[in-house]
Image 1 (cartoon, helix red, strand yellow):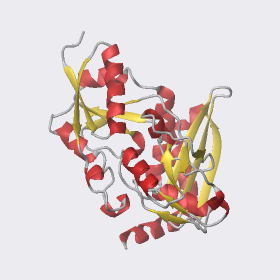
Image 2 (cartoon, rainbow, N blue to C red):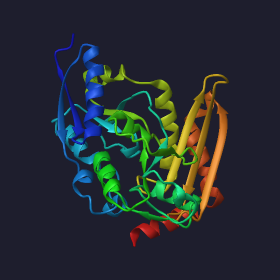
Image 3 (cartoon, rainbow, N blue to C red):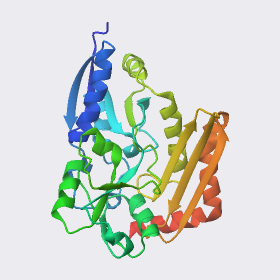
Image 4 (cartoon, rainbow, N blue to C red):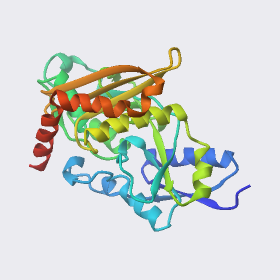
Length: 308
């Protein structure tokens, strides 16, 4: 079949490499030749500052964007929740793979008494921090950075009661421990659990090859969630959660969305079920409802807080 070698760009963490190898196998099974090229991103190198303090959306994707634009790689594989809603000029979404588990989980140390008392929880995510503090206002939340392996080790070495992780990442590299609880009350990050492949807009061969890996249901649901995020102007920093799910039984889409203050004290949530035909503007309309119901002021306060 194809003679061109599709060069797959990825970060060099264990999870990122797992994702790249997964895409590589799928492309190889279709008869395409591939090569994996791993690079370090700023988000992996600078571990002593919270992500929002670095002031960059797409901190995990920027290095690979540059590598693609410079012609060093043909595609990049990302955890979709890390990808900014606006892609760089010349780069397009080529495929979204079938979604894995969307939940966040709390990894703990075998004792959950702190849930009804005071405790310390670790996370590098403002969304998780805000939702945790909304539910457990007496708790302390500390910053936790690094790849999945590093964060798990930091939890093990610390006196924290637990840390919040996306279950999909832990399951993909067999790091999910026995001491955990599902946080089914926590609304995940837009596109959590999904992997996206981006390519150059003018590379027709590669785009056509990669399009064979696209899962249409995941593509639609993540589109709705990211539209919700983009309309709220969240970027990668504001505490915003969104989850769209499709019901085959009655051909509907349900979207749950939430915007919170950083300290978790203010929370504006929304949930709606619509016929599948209405999916294209669902994220936009629901974000607009949140903005009208106090969300505009809340977003202003969030942006001011992050500037300090």
